Length: 405
Image (cartoon, rainbow, N blue to C red; front, top):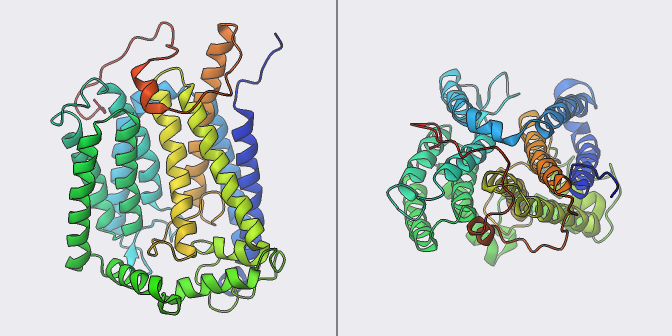
Protein backbone atom coordinates (compact mmCIF):
# COMPACT_ATOMS: atom_id res chain seq x y z
CA UNK A 1 0.00 0.00 0.00
CA UNK A 2 1.42 3.39 -0.99
CA UNK A 3 2.01 6.06 1.57
CA UNK A 4 -0.97 8.38 1.99
CA UNK A 5 -1.03 12.03 2.95
CA UNK A 6 -1.91 12.23 6.63
CA UNK A 7 -4.31 15.14 6.21
CA UNK A 8 -7.69 15.53 4.58
CA UNK A 9 -6.79 16.85 1.12
CA UNK A 10 -10.37 17.84 0.12
CA UNK A 11 -10.82 20.21 3.08
CA UNK A 12 -7.34 21.61 2.46
CA UNK A 13 -8.27 22.37 -1.15
CA UNK A 14 -11.61 23.91 -0.13
CA UNK A 15 -9.85 26.07 2.46
CA UNK A 16 -7.32 27.21 -0.15
CA UNK A 17 -10.17 28.11 -2.53
CA UNK A 18 -11.95 30.10 0.19
CA UNK A 19 -8.76 31.92 1.15
CA UNK A 20 -8.00 32.87 -2.46
CA UNK A 21 -11.62 33.95 -2.93
CA UNK A 22 -11.35 36.06 0.22
CA UNK A 23 -8.07 37.75 -0.73
CA UNK A 24 -9.50 38.67 -4.14
CA UNK A 25 -12.69 40.14 -2.66
CA UNK A 26 -10.89 42.08 0.08
CA UNK A 27 -8.69 43.68 -2.56
CA UNK A 28 -11.71 44.59 -4.67
CA UNK A 29 -14.05 45.69 -1.87
CA UNK A 30 -11.58 47.66 0.27
CA UNK A 31 -9.76 49.84 -2.27
CA UNK A 32 -11.99 52.92 -2.00
CA UNK A 33 -12.39 52.67 1.78
CA UNK A 34 -8.66 52.10 2.19
CA UNK A 35 -7.78 55.15 0.11
CA UNK A 36 -10.22 57.42 1.94
CA UNK A 37 -9.14 56.28 5.41
CA UNK A 38 -5.41 55.63 4.96
CA UNK A 39 -4.40 57.31 1.71
CA UNK A 40 -3.51 53.99 0.07
CA UNK A 41 -5.75 51.74 -1.98
CA UNK A 42 -3.90 48.64 -0.79
CA UNK A 43 -3.54 49.40 2.95
CA UNK A 44 -6.39 47.10 4.08
CA UNK A 45 -5.38 44.47 1.52
CA UNK A 46 -1.77 44.40 2.74
CA UNK A 47 -2.90 44.10 6.35
CA UNK A 48 -5.13 41.20 5.36
CA UNK A 49 -2.16 39.47 3.71
CA UNK A 50 -0.11 39.92 6.90
CA UNK A 51 -2.88 38.39 9.00
CA UNK A 52 -3.27 35.61 6.45
CA UNK A 53 0.43 34.81 6.71
CA UNK A 54 0.23 34.75 10.50
CA UNK A 55 -2.95 32.69 10.41
CA UNK A 56 -1.36 30.19 8.01
CA UNK A 57 1.57 29.71 10.38
CA UNK A 58 -0.82 29.15 13.29
CA UNK A 59 -2.85 26.70 11.18
CA UNK A 60 0.35 24.80 10.34
CA UNK A 61 1.26 24.63 14.02
CA UNK A 62 -2.23 23.44 14.98
CA UNK A 63 -2.09 20.77 12.26
CA UNK A 64 0.88 19.10 13.97
CA UNK A 65 -0.11 19.81 17.58
CA UNK A 66 -1.96 16.79 18.96
CA UNK A 67 -5.51 17.98 19.68
CA UNK A 68 -5.48 16.12 23.02
CA UNK A 69 -3.15 18.87 24.20
CA UNK A 70 -6.22 21.10 24.41
CA UNK A 71 -7.32 19.11 27.44
CA UNK A 72 -4.57 20.93 29.33
CA UNK A 73 -5.03 24.27 27.56
CA UNK A 74 -8.83 24.51 27.67
CA UNK A 75 -9.05 26.28 31.03
CA UNK A 76 -6.14 28.72 30.46
CA UNK A 77 -7.61 29.54 27.04
CA UNK A 78 -11.03 30.17 28.56
CA UNK A 79 -9.55 32.39 31.27
CA UNK A 80 -7.60 34.31 28.62
CA UNK A 81 -10.76 34.81 26.55
CA UNK A 82 -12.71 36.01 29.59
CA UNK A 83 -9.82 38.29 30.50
CA UNK A 84 -9.90 39.83 27.03
CA UNK A 85 -13.65 40.41 27.25
CA UNK A 86 -13.21 42.12 30.64
CA UNK A 87 -10.26 44.25 29.50
CA UNK A 88 -12.33 45.53 26.58
CA UNK A 89 -14.89 46.92 29.04
CA UNK A 90 -12.18 48.84 30.90
CA UNK A 91 -10.30 50.10 27.84
CA UNK A 92 -13.54 51.52 26.40
CA UNK A 93 -12.29 51.71 22.81
CA UNK A 94 -15.73 52.58 21.46
CA UNK A 95 -16.47 51.99 17.79
CA UNK A 96 -19.92 52.19 16.19
CA UNK A 97 -21.59 52.47 19.58
CA UNK A 98 -19.92 49.42 21.14
CA UNK A 99 -16.71 48.55 22.98
CA UNK A 100 -15.50 45.35 21.33
CA UNK A 101 -11.88 45.85 20.36
CA UNK A 102 -8.35 46.47 21.57
CA UNK A 103 -5.36 48.18 19.92
CA UNK A 104 -7.43 50.66 17.87
CA UNK A 105 -9.75 48.03 16.50
CA UNK A 106 -7.09 45.48 15.51
CA UNK A 107 -8.15 42.78 18.00
CA UNK A 108 -11.67 41.71 18.95
CA UNK A 109 -11.71 39.37 21.99
CA UNK A 110 -15.24 38.26 21.13
CA UNK A 111 -13.83 36.52 18.02
CA UNK A 112 -11.37 34.63 20.21
CA UNK A 113 -14.20 33.78 22.61
CA UNK A 114 -16.12 31.97 19.85
CA UNK A 115 -13.14 29.74 19.08
CA UNK A 116 -12.37 29.12 22.73
CA UNK A 117 -15.95 28.26 23.65
CA UNK A 118 -15.93 25.45 21.05
CA UNK A 119 -12.61 24.11 22.36
CA UNK A 120 -13.62 24.42 26.01
CA UNK A 121 -17.03 22.83 25.49
CA UNK A 122 -15.47 20.01 23.46
CA UNK A 123 -13.19 19.15 26.38
CA UNK A 124 -15.89 19.76 28.99
CA UNK A 125 -18.50 17.64 27.19
CA UNK A 126 -15.94 14.91 26.50
CA UNK A 127 -15.06 14.67 30.19
CA UNK A 128 -18.76 14.63 31.12
CA UNK A 129 -19.91 12.32 28.37
CA UNK A 130 -21.39 9.83 30.88
CA UNK A 131 -23.32 12.51 32.80
CA UNK A 132 -24.98 14.51 30.03
CA UNK A 133 -28.38 12.90 30.56
CA UNK A 134 -28.41 14.25 34.14
CA UNK A 135 -29.63 17.83 33.99
CA UNK A 136 -27.74 18.72 37.18
CA UNK A 137 -24.40 17.65 35.71
CA UNK A 138 -25.03 18.44 32.05
CA UNK A 139 -27.43 21.14 30.99
CA UNK A 140 -27.37 23.40 34.07
CA UNK A 141 -23.54 23.68 34.26
CA UNK A 142 -23.51 24.23 30.49
CA UNK A 143 -25.95 27.10 30.94
CA UNK A 144 -23.69 28.63 33.59
CA UNK A 145 -20.67 28.45 31.27
CA UNK A 146 -22.54 30.00 28.35
CA UNK A 147 -24.11 32.61 30.61
CA UNK A 148 -20.72 33.69 31.93
CA UNK A 149 -19.16 34.11 28.50
CA UNK A 150 -22.33 35.49 26.94
CA UNK A 151 -22.80 37.96 29.78
CA UNK A 152 -19.43 39.64 29.21
CA UNK A 153 -20.06 39.72 25.45
CA UNK A 154 -23.49 41.22 26.05
CA UNK A 155 -21.99 44.06 28.08
CA UNK A 156 -20.06 45.33 25.05
CA UNK A 157 -22.81 45.05 23.63
CA UNK A 158 -22.34 42.54 20.79
CA UNK A 159 -25.67 40.84 20.15
CA UNK A 160 -24.48 38.87 17.12
CA UNK A 161 -21.54 37.34 19.01
CA UNK A 162 -23.81 36.57 21.97
CA UNK A 163 -26.29 34.73 19.76
CA UNK A 164 -23.45 32.84 18.06
CA UNK A 165 -22.04 31.66 21.40
CA UNK A 166 -25.45 30.43 22.55
CA UNK A 167 -26.02 28.60 19.26
CA UNK A 168 -22.58 27.01 19.55
CA UNK A 169 -23.39 25.75 23.03
CA UNK A 170 -26.65 24.18 21.87
CA UNK A 171 -25.03 22.54 18.82
CA UNK A 172 -22.13 21.19 20.88
CA UNK A 173 -24.51 19.71 23.47
CA UNK A 174 -26.46 18.04 20.66
CA UNK A 175 -23.32 16.63 19.00
CA UNK A 176 -22.12 15.25 22.33
CA UNK A 177 -25.33 13.21 22.63
CA UNK A 178 -27.29 15.48 24.99
CA UNK A 179 -30.92 14.70 25.70
CA UNK A 180 -33.22 16.12 23.03
CA UNK A 181 -35.97 16.89 25.53
CA UNK A 182 -33.58 19.05 27.49
CA UNK A 183 -32.63 20.88 24.30
CA UNK A 184 -36.26 21.58 23.47
CA UNK A 185 -36.80 23.06 26.94
CA UNK A 186 -33.66 25.18 26.54
CA UNK A 187 -34.77 26.47 23.14
CA UNK A 188 -38.20 27.41 24.49
CA UNK A 189 -36.74 29.13 27.55
CA UNK A 190 -34.10 30.80 25.42
CA UNK A 191 -36.73 32.15 23.05
CA UNK A 192 -38.72 33.63 25.95
CA UNK A 193 -35.63 35.13 27.59
CA UNK A 194 -34.40 36.45 24.23
CA UNK A 195 -37.75 38.16 23.59
CA UNK A 196 -37.71 39.75 27.06
CA UNK A 197 -34.11 40.95 26.60
CA UNK A 198 -34.85 42.49 23.22
CA UNK A 199 -37.94 44.25 24.55
CA UNK A 200 -36.08 45.51 27.61
CA UNK A 201 -33.94 47.93 25.62
CA UNK A 202 -30.62 46.44 26.77
CA UNK A 203 -29.79 45.97 23.09
CA UNK A 204 -31.52 48.95 21.42
CA UNK A 205 -30.04 48.13 18.00
CA UNK A 206 -31.36 44.58 18.33
CA UNK A 207 -34.94 45.83 18.72
CA UNK A 208 -34.54 48.15 15.74
CA UNK A 209 -33.05 45.43 13.55
CA UNK A 210 -35.74 42.91 14.44
CA UNK A 211 -38.50 45.43 13.77
CA UNK A 212 -36.95 46.41 10.44
CA UNK A 213 -36.64 42.75 9.49
CA UNK A 214 -40.32 41.93 10.10
CA UNK A 215 -41.45 45.00 8.19
CA UNK A 216 -39.04 44.24 5.34
CA UNK A 217 -40.36 40.71 4.91
CA UNK A 218 -43.72 42.11 3.83
CA UNK A 219 -42.26 45.02 1.87
CA UNK A 220 -38.58 44.91 0.78
CA UNK A 221 -38.60 48.70 0.43
CA UNK A 222 -39.00 48.92 4.21
CA UNK A 223 -35.81 46.99 4.99
CA UNK A 224 -33.00 48.86 6.70
CA UNK A 225 -30.77 51.01 4.49
CA UNK A 226 -28.00 48.45 4.86
CA UNK A 227 -30.07 45.52 3.59
CA UNK A 228 -31.63 47.60 0.79
CA UNK A 229 -28.19 48.51 -0.47
CA UNK A 230 -27.11 44.87 -0.30
CA UNK A 231 -30.18 43.75 -2.26
CA UNK A 232 -29.48 46.49 -4.79
CA UNK A 233 -26.00 45.04 -5.27
CA UNK A 234 -27.39 41.58 -5.97
CA UNK A 235 -29.92 42.99 -8.44
CA UNK A 236 -27.18 44.86 -10.31
CA UNK A 237 -25.00 41.76 -10.39
CA UNK A 238 -27.62 39.61 -12.07
CA UNK A 239 -26.53 36.08 -12.98
CA UNK A 240 -22.92 36.69 -14.03
CA UNK A 241 -21.99 39.92 -12.27
CA UNK A 242 -20.54 43.21 -13.47
CA UNK A 243 -16.93 42.08 -13.14
CA UNK A 244 -14.28 42.06 -10.43
CA UNK A 245 -13.57 45.58 -9.18
CA UNK A 246 -16.52 47.14 -11.02
CA UNK A 247 -19.07 47.28 -8.20
CA UNK A 248 -20.77 50.65 -7.88
CA UNK A 249 -22.76 49.92 -4.74
CA UNK A 250 -19.58 49.58 -2.67
CA UNK A 251 -18.72 53.17 -3.68
CA UNK A 252 -22.15 54.70 -3.14
CA UNK A 253 -23.85 53.73 0.07
CA UNK A 254 -23.15 50.07 0.88
CA UNK A 255 -21.89 50.11 4.52
CA UNK A 256 -18.73 48.15 5.37
CA UNK A 257 -18.26 46.64 1.89
CA UNK A 258 -15.03 44.85 2.82
CA UNK A 259 -16.23 43.41 6.16
CA UNK A 260 -19.90 42.80 7.05
CA UNK A 261 -21.20 43.41 3.51
CA UNK A 262 -18.55 41.65 1.45
CA UNK A 263 -21.06 39.01 0.31
CA UNK A 264 -23.11 41.76 -1.35
CA UNK A 265 -19.98 42.83 -3.25
CA UNK A 266 -19.51 39.20 -4.30
CA UNK A 267 -23.09 39.17 -5.58
CA UNK A 268 -22.65 42.35 -7.60
CA UNK A 269 -19.24 41.62 -9.09
CA UNK A 270 -19.58 37.86 -9.61
CA UNK A 271 -23.34 37.60 -9.87
CA UNK A 272 -25.58 34.83 -8.63
CA UNK A 273 -23.17 32.31 -10.13
CA UNK A 274 -20.19 33.52 -8.08
CA UNK A 275 -22.28 33.79 -4.91
CA UNK A 276 -23.53 30.22 -5.48
CA UNK A 277 -19.97 28.97 -5.90
CA UNK A 278 -19.10 30.52 -2.54
CA UNK A 279 -22.11 28.85 -0.89
CA UNK A 280 -21.07 25.50 -2.36
CA UNK A 281 -17.54 25.93 -0.99
CA UNK A 282 -18.94 26.44 2.51
CA UNK A 283 -21.15 23.39 2.16
CA UNK A 284 -18.15 21.33 1.03
CA UNK A 285 -16.19 22.62 4.01
CA UNK A 286 -18.94 21.55 6.41
CA UNK A 287 -19.27 18.16 4.72
CA UNK A 288 -15.54 17.45 5.04
CA UNK A 289 -15.42 18.71 8.64
CA UNK A 290 -18.26 16.36 9.60
CA UNK A 291 -16.59 13.52 7.70
CA UNK A 292 -13.42 14.13 9.70
CA UNK A 293 -15.47 14.27 12.89
CA UNK A 294 -17.16 10.99 12.03
CA UNK A 295 -13.80 9.22 11.56
CA UNK A 296 -12.04 10.87 14.52
CA UNK A 297 -10.07 8.57 16.87
CA UNK A 298 -12.26 9.54 19.84
CA UNK A 299 -15.19 11.71 20.86
CA UNK A 300 -12.97 14.67 21.71
CA UNK A 301 -11.76 14.75 18.12
CA UNK A 302 -15.34 14.40 16.89
CA UNK A 303 -16.51 17.34 18.99
CA UNK A 304 -13.60 19.54 17.98
CA UNK A 305 -13.84 18.88 14.24
CA UNK A 306 -17.63 18.91 14.14
CA UNK A 307 -17.99 21.92 16.43
CA UNK A 308 -15.38 24.06 14.67
CA UNK A 309 -16.74 23.19 11.24
CA UNK A 310 -20.32 23.97 12.21
CA UNK A 311 -19.23 27.21 13.88
CA UNK A 312 -17.51 28.57 10.76
CA UNK A 313 -20.32 27.55 8.42
CA UNK A 314 -23.00 28.87 10.80
CA UNK A 315 -21.24 32.24 10.84
CA UNK A 316 -21.16 32.19 7.04
CA UNK A 317 -24.84 31.25 6.77
CA UNK A 318 -25.87 34.06 9.13
CA UNK A 319 -23.83 36.65 7.22
CA UNK A 320 -25.16 35.56 3.82
CA UNK A 321 -28.76 35.26 5.02
CA UNK A 322 -28.61 38.79 6.44
CA UNK A 323 -27.34 40.22 3.15
CA UNK A 324 -30.32 38.83 1.23
CA UNK A 325 -32.87 39.84 3.87
CA UNK A 326 -33.61 36.39 5.30
CA UNK A 327 -32.46 37.23 8.84
CA UNK A 328 -32.30 40.34 11.02
CA UNK A 329 -29.02 42.19 10.64
CA UNK A 330 -26.44 40.54 12.91
CA UNK A 331 -23.00 41.95 12.08
CA UNK A 332 -21.26 38.57 11.73
CA UNK A 333 -18.13 38.44 9.60
CA UNK A 334 -17.98 36.11 6.60
CA UNK A 335 -15.24 33.57 7.48
CA UNK A 336 -12.25 33.53 5.10
CA UNK A 337 -13.77 36.39 3.07
CA UNK A 338 -14.33 39.45 5.29
CA UNK A 339 -11.40 41.73 6.04
CA UNK A 340 -10.33 41.55 9.66
CA UNK A 341 -7.31 40.17 11.46
CA UNK A 342 -8.99 38.64 14.50
CA UNK A 343 -11.59 36.77 12.48
CA UNK A 344 -9.08 35.45 9.94
CA UNK A 345 -6.65 34.36 12.66
CA UNK A 346 -9.20 32.35 14.65
CA UNK A 347 -10.64 30.92 11.42
CA UNK A 348 -7.25 29.59 10.33
CA UNK A 349 -6.63 28.27 13.83
CA UNK A 350 -9.88 26.31 13.62
CA UNK A 351 -8.84 24.89 10.24
CA UNK A 352 -5.52 23.76 11.72
CA UNK A 353 -7.26 21.91 14.56
CA UNK A 354 -9.63 20.18 12.13
CA UNK A 355 -6.66 19.13 9.99
CA UNK A 356 -4.94 17.74 13.08
CA UNK A 357 -7.96 15.57 13.88
CA UNK A 358 -7.85 14.37 10.28
CA UNK A 359 -4.10 13.70 10.46
CA UNK A 360 -4.33 11.61 13.61
CA UNK A 361 -7.30 9.71 12.22
CA UNK A 362 -5.46 8.92 9.00
CA UNK A 363 -2.36 7.97 10.97
CA UNK A 364 -4.37 5.50 13.04
CA UNK A 365 -5.87 3.96 9.93
CA UNK A 366 -2.44 3.68 8.34
CA UNK A 367 -1.06 1.93 11.43
CA UNK A 368 -3.89 -0.60 11.17
CA UNK A 369 -3.28 -1.09 7.44
CA UNK A 370 -6.74 0.20 6.52
CA UNK A 371 -7.90 2.51 3.76
CA UNK A 372 -10.03 5.53 4.75
CA UNK A 373 -13.77 5.13 4.21
CA UNK A 374 -14.92 8.09 2.12
CA UNK A 375 -18.46 6.74 1.87
CA UNK A 376 -19.23 6.70 5.59
CA UNK A 377 -22.45 8.52 6.41
CA UNK A 378 -21.99 11.39 8.88
CA UNK A 379 -23.86 10.61 12.10
CA UNK A 380 -22.01 12.09 15.06
CA UNK A 381 -24.68 11.31 17.64
CA UNK A 382 -24.87 7.63 16.70
CA UNK A 383 -21.07 7.46 16.55
CA UNK A 384 -20.77 8.85 20.08
CA UNK A 385 -22.57 5.80 21.43
CA UNK A 386 -20.59 3.34 19.33
CA UNK A 387 -16.99 4.28 20.01
CA UNK A 388 -14.64 3.93 17.10
CA UNK A 389 -10.86 3.95 17.07
CA UNK A 390 -9.28 4.52 20.45
CA UNK A 391 -5.84 5.97 20.87
CA UNK A 392 -3.48 3.34 22.17
CA UNK A 393 -1.90 3.97 25.51
CA UNK A 394 -4.04 7.02 26.26
CA UNK A 395 -6.19 6.54 29.35
CA UNK A 396 -9.14 8.82 29.85
CA UNK A 397 -7.93 11.66 32.03
CA UNK A 398 -10.06 13.38 34.60
CA UNK A 399 -9.72 17.02 35.46
CA UNK A 400 -11.13 18.91 38.37
CA UNK A 401 -12.86 22.19 39.09
CA UNK A 402 -13.00 24.65 36.22
CA UNK A 403 -10.82 22.31 34.17
CA UNK A 404 -13.68 21.54 31.78
CA UNK A 405 -14.69 18.63 33.99
